[in-house]
Image 1 (tube, one colour):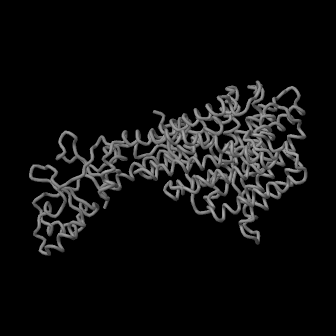
Image 2: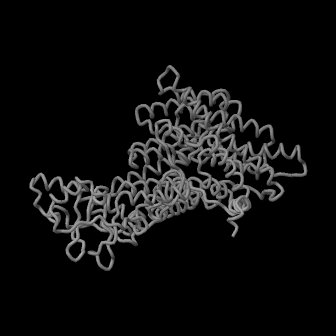
Length: 607
């Protein structure tokens, strides 16, 4: 049975609960904005300390170091520290953050431990500050989500409200990191909430708006990357964008599989997992010695690529070296974000694609910067299966509206390719899929909210008179009365055909145990405190009543006279709404062409 406390929580108006969650989301947005700024400065501090040997917090690229061959050891130091933190602090700091936040939503009722909120940003700052080829977005998404979860745990909230607060923290973290409030909201919906409802959308917008306001106040109002005017070659470039979309989809699949293959290889190493991040960092250090641009976040290199300032040879080197450094480092189980480094190597790939196309088709005159931007959004969108988020994201970080059309086209083609080769997982969900968790990322209207009780209820009422005895009812059931045998409960009507109660088979058995003679009347054995539904009520509302009061069927009554039974809604009526949706999706109806063809096969039907 439902507890009294839970029943009391149902009685609170939904508007009041949404107002409370919205107020909490405002505080989460402000805190997440400040935490994102602190992480940004902390990464700058560690970068300056380890590579430039100075005390400063400005965001300086690690590629400007003067360490020579000693630079190989700097990432190893960071890897050792992160390995110790993961082993003796919490293993939740490992990885790029978003799958861990998804895991908290799916299997831990949106509860994240406080230590994650503390250790995740610190470990990420150390990993990135010592040269890790990561971004800050994944860790701050997980950290923001942890803040939202902790707020939800501190107050008297439901699991769904706690999930909304977790998503608010994650969206606020991303918005504050990149100054992309719209993409932050959509990403939280696509990867964490798996719903689009006012109860979640309103708090998300509040949290993201305030977090972005904090970013604008502390870091300035401009876009993340300053890029010059781009020619997106619409419509003459459409054939090339089609090819780019196919390429981005294939590359997204290949990169996802490569990353998890590297993770599998690290798990086979005959050493304690504490040492894995240091081993991966050694590989990073070697690559970074020869290609310094792979060290650290690399926002400056991304800007250079988008502005078309790198030659094709350097683009090729950056693309291969950054991708290799990323999979080796992240596959080792260290802490860091996946978004920014993937942006770098995929943008380099897009730029190279445009240069190759210009070589073979000089008249195309494609802009490498434009194709870099489009590839940047399409590859990660396809890999994460959050295509809409990264169409908006790529637009928001440049604020160039002309990018929207090619972004939409290339991103959806890439997403289609990724769906073809990875139908049940993505770079975000593969880790969860390996643990037996399938993440349903499609959005569709609930069939129960699109049908009314009147559409699915039974109109042939299973009724019995109030004067009938329990013994007589039991005998009729034993004789396999067709009307009574198929129902678990029967409606009790008085002499004037008014509804006075309901009796279940369980009630009959209990009454016979109490009085084996069966002389008790059904009205006395059944329940007279009825929970009812109405023909114009949504099936979802009726189902909620069943769950709330732990019952399996409802009398359907007239709103103007609640003692007038007009129908009966059982579990089969709930499933009928689902069946209607299933038929709408899978049962094909004959079209005009088919009917015309059939009429010529059978001339008699033309009339």
